[in-house]
Image 1 (cartoon, rainbow, N blue to C red):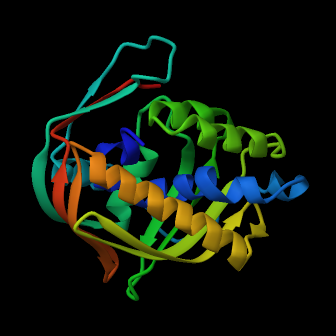
Image 2 (image 1 turned 45 degrees about the vertical axis):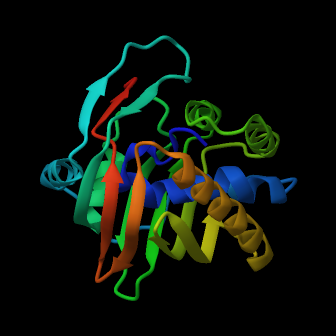
Length: 242
């Protein structure tokens, strides 16, 4: 699970969605068909401006730079150093960061991330099927997980919309999560599928945080329409950009 989370809190909400899909959902739904034709994500009512992106970038403190394109996904994202950070990000700032990400293998678009007053988070967007394998390889996911995703992706004819609603907290690098609702295309995933996938994601995040030299999370929570973070992030991140 090297280089997971893209080295930045500001994309955590969207990464939760992608991780859930890659590690859990897809392998448990055989024979999918036209239900995935729905490629228009839910409108959560979250919009953003260039100022929101600039604010998110400034708060994160991460110095961004570009890498030469070698044509390979491995090595296309490199994080270095670490810095302490205690900050709060709004729904608009996280949404801006997710949509304006320049990394070539970033597999989601048309993203909205919404933090609710009850401590839950919602996220919607479109999943680019063609980039998922490269994304997983760049993040250092296990080959077994990549194969599972590849087998499942054979059943998906287009780039599906996704939606997820969940509650999650992180305390001293330990993740807890409660996924309340999830959709891929227009298919609502069953509680059994969600429960199985949720366990995989929790294990993956805990394993990453236990071994990461660049990221540590003392506390992370959603409240009052914002995400609160206290921990460390990489000092710099270099990516191959599109």
